[in-house]
Length: 287
Image (tube, rainbow, N blue to C red):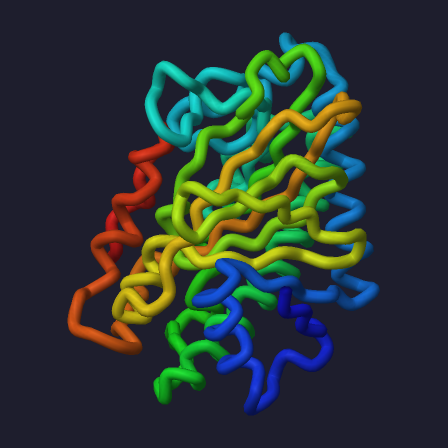
């Protein structure tokens, strides 16, 4: 599988390599710089500390309206509500940072918010560079936004934790495609599998210091269908009693109108309605 270097992403060849890897492999890997690795490690450690708290404490750091903060098993699903994803999670959306700060008044929650914001900044920058290089491969200009990053306020960071007590099925998270533009994922152990056809699944475990990138439904529309959204799932792996992953679900910020790189289908409406398919709230309407 293609491995790009974060330090060398801006290159005339990056977009073509990424485009080819997404079409042929469904994903690509990026070797992160030391500052990025440190930022994600800090979030991983802060998340592990928060997950270890009693549920009663974590419930206070939860907002059922925006779904930022902690979520227990049973809310989010990949295929049907009757088969919820078997993990607990923490979510950070920059648009709702104040809500998180209102909920998280204690030191561990505060530390998590700080580390989640830092990681979101790192991943937003990486996302913007990858999308910009892909746009160049299609002969298009990068996505612009008058208020800075075109993705920061429409994207969010989520940390999933699978523990032994929750691993009650062979497939912990059913096969699905992400409804967003691009997903970035780092994990501390095996379990993720990807597929191009929904039949043959292969393991994808980013090594330490690397992050996986794979396309969602919106990126498929941007490419006129040339790039398919990657089907993926999480399975139970023998002798793995716990797994934690950090994901960045990249989507355009409110006010950013997407123009397809290829084809005529407008991807914007898909970007704003996809979350509801997985039990999550829709992104607020564009203003």
